[in-house]
Image (cartoon, rainbow over all chains, first blue to last red; front, top):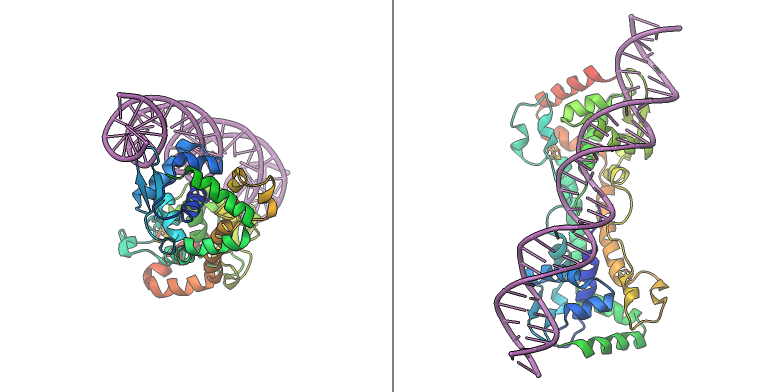
Length: 162
Length: 162
DNA sequence: CGAATTACGGATACATAATGTCCCTATTCG
DNA sequence: CGAATAGGGACATTATGTATCCGTAATTCG
Ligand code: SF4
Ligand code: SF4
């Protein structure tokens, strides 16, 4: 079980977008170039974000993406679920129903304890991701990244932002 | 991202094994029949448990599997990691290194904030699974499952246990 | 001892999902 | 109008999960 690489891509892109000034847009091309990723495929990840309503888009030259909400209202979970889907990581195949000792239809009485325990762990994972917003990430990055690189990247991005 | 079905199989098998009397063994064949699973493939999952040291095996007729530790010392995480692997679900592909604004080798200064946040969520998931043992599961199942089915399954299993 | 039964591991085939590319369309900007 | 953009459909390629088959060594039982 491993998350798709699109999750990493989407998170990085949102991190960049969250630093964009109000009203500016950044294109797929710029985001792909900045991260060294295949433009066409990265586009699929960004489309997922768009369909989930996390980003806003404009067409035409100077078009691209910006966040649809404020950075402190966009959580990691939002992005992860937009790309990876919001389904549970443990899917129950009802193998309990095959038990020859049980009357038919017994398993329909609801998910058993094993499934519930796995789902609780799943929820713990989601809760941890729900807690962290891109505003939090911005603060951490600002402390960690050296000022030259920070402003260098900022300039690079603004030069290409529509 | 979805857990392999072998995880569900292994959990169910351990649940059965945890109810086995001291010193008795249950074969792959019986476990497969009980759950309606392909014997050969289930065998791979059980071999993973064996390699992880979670179960003890004997060969020959009347051979099979039993738990290697007490049920209250075997956690869900043990079983999940034995089958699914203990690697992180978020793997970092170092795309930060492609940023044209950064000096070469910058990314080697360690994992960035994004990776750390994802890994913390991963750890929350693992912590939730680590907390629950098969002794806990046994208690829950004992409350939930009707006595007839419980003893019926028990009889079925003991008839086939070596 | 000999036959049956078991776990184990390697080899192989098949199915599904992830990854990546290509091309066409509608929209928007200058 | 012409260039650049998001969006989406149709593939091709690759990796992973699922499943089967068979040979080997160990063990039990008659
Ligand atoms: S509900 Fe529980 S017992 Fe039934 S198949 Fe799912 S995990 Fe197994
Ligand atoms: S360490 Fe952080 S910035 Fe570098 S590739 Fe991994 S997630 Fe991205």
